[in-house]
Image 1 (spheres, rainbow, N blue to C red):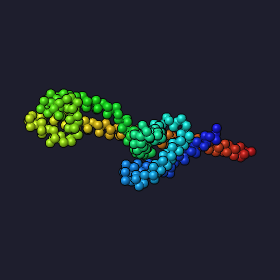
Image 2 (cartoon, one colour):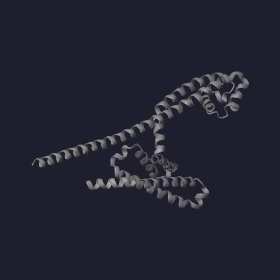
Image 3 (cartoon, one colour):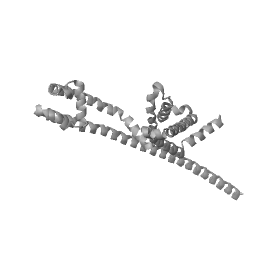
Image 4 (cartoon, rainbow, N blue to C red):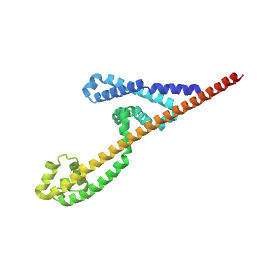
Length: 277
């Protein structure tokens, strides 16, 4: 049992070493390039066999790496969300991409997402976004309410004159989404509507100010605050870990000094006893 534990520890250290991690990152980048080249029919006609062989070899390395990590960590591997993320991506790549599953060949590009789990900076960004989901969901709910209110108003105001944009509630909401993105909103939508409704600007301008600038600022504010909070939390945890190590070393030093004092006192008593003799 001890031999197995030692073997697992050695495998974990080897697989998670910086050298191996850099090698895996290089393979992911190479695989992303080969998968991109496979989209070119000319390249595939000339180098198709080579690209497919490289793709299979890289996948084999990924499978070996995941298997080694599972062996090293056991069931603890599946308690780590990033470990499950890596395992899922590699498992999807192993699904036969032929017959009715041919569409799954396009999912091979998901292997590139493993860069997220291997690079701490990207992991931090993704974790921050996940922690910001509750706040983002609240803002999204507010946007749905605003969209619905403005869509009902726009359908009633402009639906008869411009049914191609505001004829139905669903079509109006899509038009408002286009306006929110500022894509051809003025010359493509607002000005044609204003030719028949001169005061339509009083509807479009407030909508853009609220939906585009205010809501976007709220989204960014939530994400930035979440990232700042997580950064401060990580900093506090790092400081707490350092303080714990310092406290442990200080306690050990105090123990050693106490033992040294006791030895000096015992030696002094011994010398005094010999001097009395």
